[in-house]
Length: 213
Image (cartoon, rainbow, N blue to C red):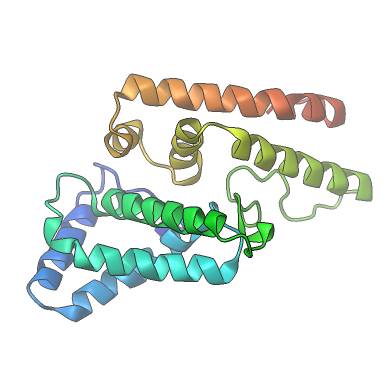
């Protein structure tokens, strides 16, 4: 799907188009910002959906993300790609919501934590195939849950790095810019995250299929 592809240097029209829409929005063209929302709403909601489980909260956070982005749009200088800038706002907005929820003892735990449904990268379960059995389906679900649990257990810096790389498909350069660290640090974090997840999942895969994650 095209809306899942990360902006790269190989597609210069993407950031140029975004920059033009930003300029038009700052100049007072509300329709231009609506186009930015339409373009990135699904990606922002998917991103937030990996941080929380409650669908209503995801929608609220996404709405708040775009409100914050609109208010801060005059600060966007084009030094980073627009989605990288928007991503940072979405993550910070989601973190604030989660922090507020932790302070509210009446909030259900089901609304907290990473979401493993619709995970497009760390999901070994795909469409049923003709050779699937109830046992293999169950095993796939168990492995998927193990991956989700391993991802949730990672330190925040490792989890963010692996999410940006594997789920968002961002380049090491963009991740380094977003996380404000050297590319070598990004590579190290992603390697450590993969090793940690692999350590949890590998025994299950070896047992079921003889293959390694």
